[in-house]
Image 1 (cartoon, rainbow, N blue to C red):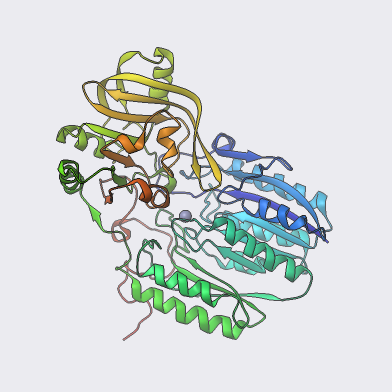
Image 2: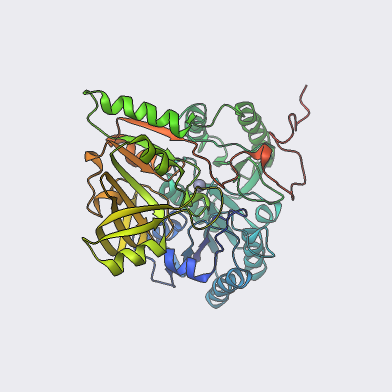
Length: 493
Ligand SMILES: [Zn+2]
């Protein structure tokens, strides 16, 4: 038996001012065939999952290219076509194969391609024919399209948000694909369109209990896998929205019923799932109270949830930083402000230099103005990184600057990335536990890493150019009504 695996992934914020080209893939993660590291990345965990199954010795694994770009704006047409054709060529050279496993994200949009994954999967289907098993993993912040479902035999999205289960979900999908390739099972995909879009963190109710029940349901009866596609707010595409996916062992009726019931349950959660957010002023008041309390021995974490490069924005917003400076909060760590120009200046000035620096606020409107300040260059590193579970996320060349007269330490970086884990600070010489306040640019992925060192976690809505309110976002491609843009899309009375 021969299995082909590859990964092509990014999350496209079609409203972002940061275009995505080949250099964005090469800077974030690009592994040619055979060069994938032993550790997984978010969307390529299928590679280490297949390698460990191959150790059992009953199939041959052919690895194609695996690549990922940090979420950003529209992918350049040539970049998508080049990466797609690279993988298709590798697949053609690998034929005949019994199965194809793809590590995808599912929210990639390129110039002229609103559904890159649908396009890629249908090319793969054309290439291998109808009898080869094709499976893929997806991020739940994606768009589910009929073209994808038509081309796939099995699929799996991460259930957790934060996506702490990406490795587990990859292993589960690999297991289904291998069993199907041996003809032990016949996976069938059933879907239900919840016709809504919202933010669905699973670190809190009601999604926590829902996901726990889904996990328990999988493997019972003929249910092979259940996924909830949350949808991705920042994609102006026809299929934007939440969907339930049930993969059964050849039980389309059972799958459809279950998808419908689970989907209507999720529809019932609408409007009640988002994290409770505070304005910067409210958050700073809460942080100040905590700092003043002698019982507080750990930092207060302020999550700047919409200036999150993981959602495709630039990540150079300054609104929360300037509110902290104005409020006189002194002992702060900030991860990160994306600012390649500031990094280049710090590098040229050198560690220990005191310079006047323009910080952040350069890439586009909506995230605040640049901050001009006297700073001390505390550290400069050519290739900074942070952990995300088992994977290593590069920050690129980075610097730590301290605003003069304060203990406000800011990481400025060149590879746009959200903040995942506290070692983003410690790897650059900042002790995160010694700070009163930590600012993280992340919607919820930081949570698993920071909850253990935080006195409190506060979600801050500081304003941004991220389209966080679907009622006010100009979606021009929707072909059906979804909540909250329409109130009752299922016409339930
Ligand atoms: Zn996601």
